[in-house]
Length: 150
Image 1 (cartoon, helix red, strand yellow):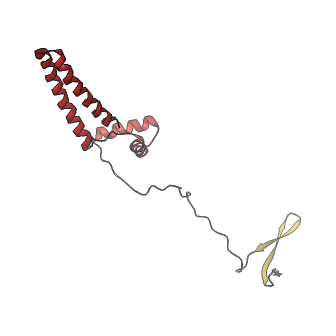
Image 2 (spheres, rainbow, N blue to C red):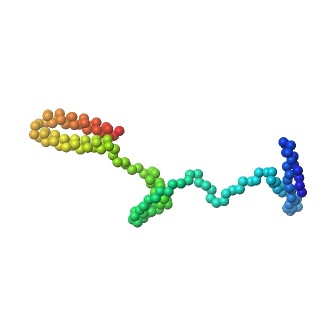
Image 3 (tube, rainbow, N blue to C red):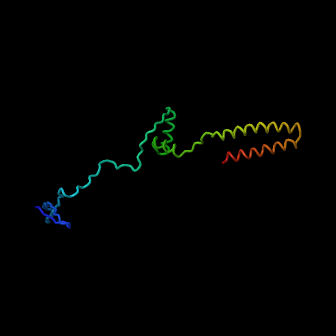
């Protein structure tokens, strides 16, 4: 059976109607013609992930290191790659000292030598002379410690 249907904009639209007998009722199945948009087909397989891991970085381990990492990952319930990813992102590693921090550290070492010499001078010359020298070094130490903390 062939049926023409008029659309609101004045165009005609053709449809095929086929009878389908189900139990005691007669039903019609509407088949889409070429004028209708075809249904979008779903892609087969697993749905795409929201965040794709596109970059592959490799790490080389000795056998002992690999088994240590593998045991740690198993104890956390992660795969080895997921464990390494999480450990590298969430762990904190203290960086090396900057050039300024190295300079301040050298100054501290030099000041400890001076304080040792001051203690020797205290025994030789007397307490008052060494107290003046000590106060000067204490102020310098406080300045260096403030710089290191900031």
